[in-house]
Length: 170
Image: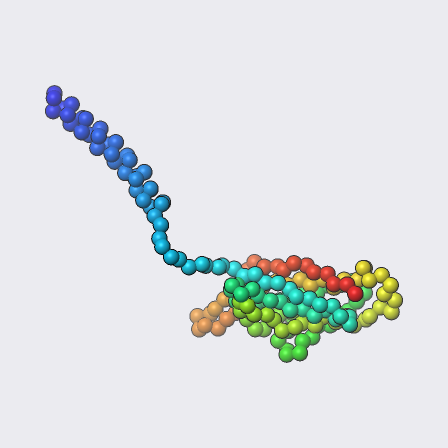
């Protein structure tokens, strides 16, 4: 009987110790620290730079220094009585079938697009109230994806990051 009591006491102690092993293991895995490290920045941060002069909106999309490479597209809106004409000096912007103008080059971190000009063709003769006139720019970006052969491409079906709406008056 004495052996049985001793055996039960030993089994209870072993059971108690094994129950505490998970807590001890969790402590060592949770609170382990390492020296050094690298800052990892995921995503992109782009801004729109706009200027309005001579009935033309000058649009440049800039990508911040620590951002990933992106593709950019831009669309402009104004009152229905005005016709907008898009142009650029280097031929890097091209129209898509969806009303957006697409920048053909990749915009790397710290880079910017070439200037896109959005001109109002039918200038109103009497513009006494400049506060009612606005050209709103909407731009979207998507991260650059790569095919197996290394060529970059854009997948506009994935969620695009939409830039802020900007209005420009006279």
